[in-house]
Length: 291
Image 1: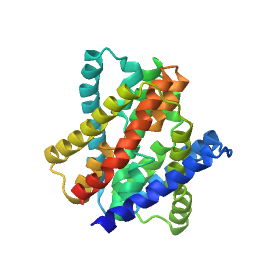
Image 2: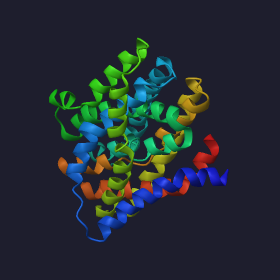
Image 3: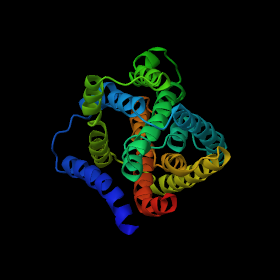
């Protein structure tokens, strides 16, 4: 079991570590360019290739989307009153409690732990979360909402097209699968490398508060993931994916949005870093539990 867990975690930590070392050594890394490639090309292709050819069935993928939506709602219902009790700004901190890193960390962990079926299920969870994060989430942090934010998300048509192939039991043409699969394979290594670069560049403050919020994020995530898997009667890979994705540390996007909309980015950076460090410590035990 130790060897299995190490085999799952090593690629994640090594790839992110390479990004961290790259940034700390002062080498140039165009985060905006890489993020654009991942957002507009790699991730939609990964989504299509993973969903359109999976043998799990539409019900399993729908369960992942439902679980992602339910988890987000529950995180808000827990996080909002906690922040109010401790007189912390929800516009600054609520995103840190409700947006786990289901992309950079969640996707590779699910793929390495459960193979292609795990990747497909985690992509369905991820796709739902991305839509929520880049619409309702951004609207909450920024204080405004724009329909353009939805139109600019290519992951939505990629998901819809994949759903058509899946629902009609239509075979994906070889040229289309090979192309999307090839481009989609860029997603996970680029996400992990960028995660390492981003962590190296963050400048946190208020580490005591950040650590406390990080501990809440991880414990809440595990509890909600476990609870949802019981309520939805999920078993096997579906159960493991939901628990893993809900238990992820704070998404780096939280810092980017805080910086973009001037929501105390240094404070958010502290939660991102401390939750990532705590997650690194907790992940072996979490993988042991779900496997």
